[in-house]
Image (cartoon, rainbow, N blue to C red):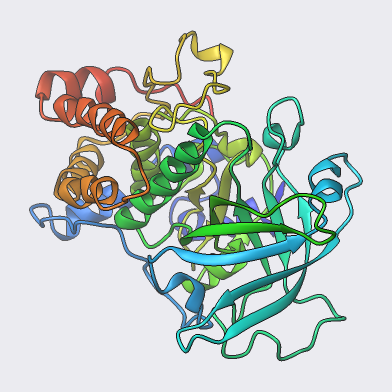
Length: 386
């Protein structure tokens, strides 16, 4: 029996097996689970405007993610050495992360940084790759984070601008940031993010400081703990094995933003969570190849047979009519709030904003047409490529 993050699949599926014996994985997961329970309990109940965690534990305070204001920080490091350390055996390099607190006092934190990612770590694609910042190495003061915006943080991903020489790449960072915020609006089981204006300062002064937009992403273990869940790290789990409600929302969201750069079974741009006795839940991340972001380097997977990442494809096993209708209602109820994310982000230029909103409006036009809903989400299902 395969193991998932230290748990066997028999453990994950135990509640169902106790009721129906010990059928195959396919037979278990083919059963209508969450949807059938909701129908029996309240067939006419109006769904909420977002999916919330079933049971959440009191998380450690994360001041970094308690505000959506742009955070102004300075990251000082050996820029040349760090950005060129992109091999498989990458090192951690000393750095300092600083900002001015609400009292006007300068806060300086010791850190280490290293490059991360895959595509954006390749110098042929990006000359400034994404970073991972570690604030709690053993040699740092134990209390250096106490009372700061970074209290209770350990390792943080920083999504950077990719290319220094092309101003448009900052817009791609902003558009990807908004994609994360959209999913936050739809469910608690999502990554928190914080937009930052980062001034990169070279420790040796070999190049002048420069400022670019970036954003911090919540640590996966903290995201899981915030939702009373644990991270599952095993391969081979497919969409049909997931919690029905959240998996439907996951699939619709990916279609909504035009993202096909993910694969549940390979844990590619997906974090799997186990929450109590529920079936696994997929949490998406890394949206830079989505149609709503549309950077010049993004291309759709060859297996889809599409020529443009802005051409949407619904990748999903077949869903119940109830789950489809419920998810559509969630997205419709959040439409104005989602659009406000774009209109309220002043750093996003008008061309980028208009292009994003036009793309999302195409989705809303589609879900407003019952015939298109049947064609797209009922008749075109079953292509669980992921």
